[in-house]
Image (cartoon, rainbow, N blue to C red; front, side):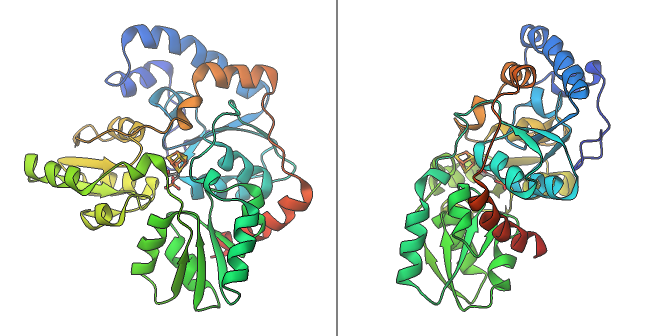
Amino acid sequence: MPVQNHDVPELALDQVWDKICHFVTEPEWEIFHPIISQIRRLKNETNTVILAHNYQPVEIFWGVADYTGDSLQLAQIAAEQHLPNVLMAGVSFMAETVKIISPTTRVLLPSLDAGCSLAESITAQDVRDMRLEHPNAKVVTYVNTSAEVKAESDICCTSSNAVDVVNSCDSDEIIFIPDRHLASYVQELTDKKIHVWQGQCDVHDVFDVQTMNELRWLHPDIQILVHPECKKEVQNAADFIGSTSALANYIRTNKPERVALITECTMSANVAAECPETQFIQPCSLCPHMRRISLHKILRSLQNGQHEVTVAPEVAVRAKAAIDAMLRV
Ligand code: 13P
Ligand code: SF4
């Protein structure tokens, strides 16, 4: 099956090694390649499709993923295809989103510890309280949230469609949850009044403007690409702002000589494997939740059917309405 956003057919094992040899050591590859072979065999035997987020390591991204992408793309794949079995190489909210969109799909998450600091910053009760405070506002919820929080929302969004989603709402006031930095990015690009929940992603919040200045001073020709979960002043120092896939596409299209990808840093290797002419220079911030997923855990998950993701039907119905509203936009 092709890797959808790249249009690359499944690579033979020696081609995988050619792609990732600059990012893993030979001893690591000796461990990885037999596991990759076992995973490929088992996913075919069990008719399971592996969806991998852009933050997954090269051996998963290039070795075993059937589809790769940002949060929106992974959700769209689940919505468009009637997949009987999905394994999510990503975090819990991504697996839950697939389950909500496709209730009959069996969704596996290789580690129950793969959460999200941003998703954990808000509860369903918090959303109900904000609605009481701003009764005329529509609730726009970033997909990096629990199913219960989505269920309290009018519409979901991702980093790649947040502005369009907000502008599509038939209200001049918006409660935007839970990321305050994504909210300020949206506020710059819309006339609507945004009420902000003070959540943040710990991985993106560490980047500061001083680091951006140092990068420009050390490498005057550098292009700085920033995820909108970063602070506003970091966004202001960017040459381009976008979702993980938008950042990757910028590099594929513009082929800059030198870039800094200001986002979770595992992603750089995935793009660098495809764009060897670009030099990647950057500070590193790792997502501890994404790092819970490994080849070993994917193999165990396929062997044992663990961990199957479930969402209470009464929550799923309401959360699905919010996700469907986003997919229509
Ligand atoms: P994207 O939707 O841009 O892939 O972002 C997901 C995420 O978790 C960023 O931290
Ligand atoms: Fe959540 Fe941040 Fe990790 Fe993305 S990078 S999954 S927002 S903790």
